[in-house]
Image (cartoon, rainbow over all chains, first blue to last red; front, top):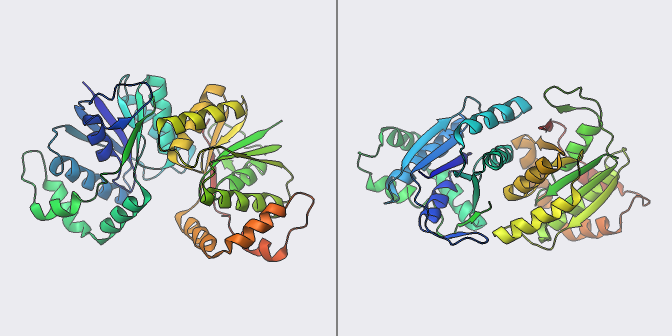
Length: 190
Length: 190
């Protein structure tokens, strides 16, 4: 079973593109065969900051409504709102340590730099793969601006009641499915 | 001899605050004595992107004109303009590998996340310390806005001719020395 474990910050960008690029073999790596990687489970590790909660809801809609590739998606909210001390960092890293196993794909694109560092260090210890997705700056700005204009309460309510059995709303699809970048590059680092 | 090795991106923020906070013992850590750390040498590892060049020049003025603590400052420009492929990442990491030794302090605050990850992984391998400085978002925004308003050509020319023996210009000091945050928190992670 292949698992993708991603850190998430205030921006939803990265993990969905990483998932699509891994699934279709469109990733860059040195000395690899670019074979498509069938991801079975996606874990989103995040803080409980309200902005990050919103990013999680967008990620949820992206995975359920904006891709035809089936995958089990899990939300892992940690009981911290940010990493501002060595204790927060340790808690974040200890939690990642419980989730990450050998052979997993660990995506450090989202969240604070200290989260990315924690994720990469644990991945190295556990002999997991490390990946990141680079979204061109203009695309990143376009996506950030679109998110600012969204009705957060409405989106939040929609995302809360959405699951794999429910039908996606065409109006939301139009907005949310545009919050991704087709020119994002995923690189596999180890 | 104590060395501080820092990655740098388009924003100058972080390394100067890390240096001051280490030097004065104002850093957070678990199970440590918060003793002031006398840093002898600071290495700035960066790409040759023009925005990053400008950030380097600001860092240079900060160290020479905005602190009374003497230190030797070294610029390490790598021959890449960004990390957008596994090859760029490898080149960046290989270069860090040459500079980082056991006991060094490695600051991953500046630059792309993949640079931070490369720095932290090399630090772990070499048994170096890892630190980062968190600048409050409002302070970060204030500093970014001030930089946007600066006369880049004039600053660049000033920074080029500045060295430890030259006198700092009071007019530049007023602008540049405000580009730091007094409420930045430095955390020592390992």
